[in-house]
Amino acid sequence: MDELRQIELDMVEGERRLAELEARLVELKRLNEDTTKVRGQLDVMRKTQLDREQNRQRLLSLLHP
Image 1 (cartoon, rainbow, N blue to C red):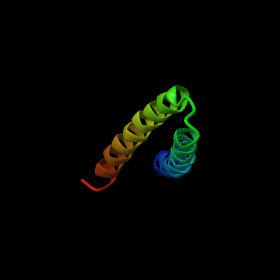
Image 2 (cartoon, rainbow, N blue to C red):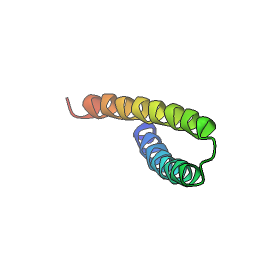
Image 3 (cartoon, rainbow, N blue to C red):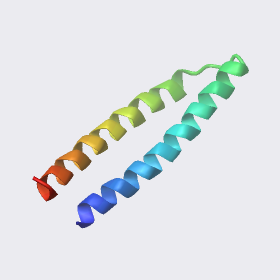
């Protein structure tokens, strides 16, 4: 199913982006810099990943009832 494949690709890319943002957050903390913007981006990305996972599970349940 093309939709499932796309969601899985998006999830992989999202995980990569989350890892980058988390590394950036650690670096900002280490430098005692403002982390507000990165924290906000992380919150949005985590919510998006959760939505993708829920959609993925929904599609899988349709394929394998």
